[in-house]
Amino acid sequence: MTTYVWDYLPEYENERDDLIDAVDTVFRSGRLVLGASVQGFESEFAAYHGLAHCTGVDNGTNAVKLGLQALGVGPGDEVITVSNTAAPTVLAIDGTGATPVFVDIREEDFLMDTAQVAAAVTPRTKALLPVHLYGQCVDMAPLEDLARRHGLKILEDCAQSHGAHHHGRTAGTMGDAAAFSFYPTKVLGAYGDGGAVVTDIPEVDADLRRLRYYGMADTYYVVQTPGHNSRLDEVQAEILRRKLRRLDTYIEGRRAVARRYEEGLADLVAPDGLRLPRVTDGNDHVYYVYVVRHPRRDGIIERLKGYGISLNISYPWPVHTMSGFRHLGYGKGSLPVTERLAGEIFSLPMYPSLSEDVQDKVISALREVLTEGIRS
Image (cartoon, rainbow, N blue to C red; front, side, top):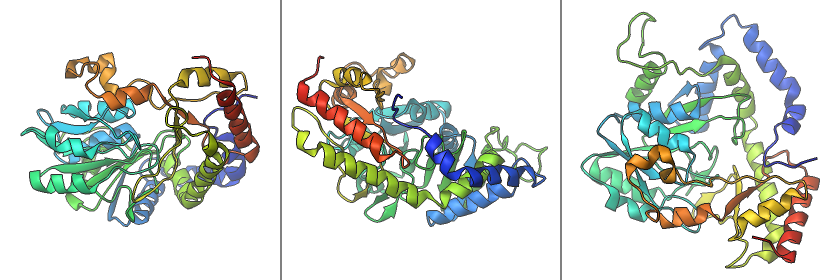
């Protein structure tokens, strides 16, 4: 049987009764759109973060897009972010009519190099979009200082960092607003698409609620400002309510897998070979994915297929190198760290219900491949 980087079936078997009850609860409620389950999840997810407001939306991409729009980002503006991210982060910026501006990432943790952001600010810069990638947070203090000095907005992309902390603060509580994805693979994942934006600013929340509902507020028939059909599904919201109660348990499960990998592979780490994830200062990592590095990455992945292990790369093609963003003018070599790491990073299987037997299989196979040598 092939081992993949993610599998929801073990979790489903463990939680099946509760998940089926969640679906039945919605179907028996008499309301299938923006009902008690969406309202309940919004309230509970906001409370988890210690914030006043949460607006559920249909997916993580629109969480970023609507979050930016609610913060006043639109055509002619610039938004500073990174290229080492899922393309939807940048597509969401583009969807507002604003221009994405990229800075490079840090070698040690693959996160935004905040030391480069000040030089990227122009009179057109409207917002900063740090991506809390792989399960830990960007160094936020320099961004907060920069935002204060230049009057910029901060939208945190928390799609991969549910429950992570940075110097004691929860991911999603350090900017003006924060966007989340509940795609099934996430630390808090639905059984389909879903997203949310959290904020402490009532005006931003009010704008978000209009934007997700055609631009309407008090009545279905009156559009106050052009919006979208971006409502969080009632069934997914009820599932997320149930799973939110287990979020901290999921995180502990992921950390246990990460510890086992570190214990099993630590002696193979070398400056010119295998590198394991580094938890940077002030961060509590939630290990959405367990990203390692090796200069001969492609050979390793190919060899591991022979052991029945199929691995993933997050992400093999930086966004600025994609043909769809060629118009932004970032040529080869413009983001050297991002480009180099894109050829070295790969992810080991990571999810809280990953059995120890499968973990041992991955560790043993990777040890054999690294010890015997890799054909590039």
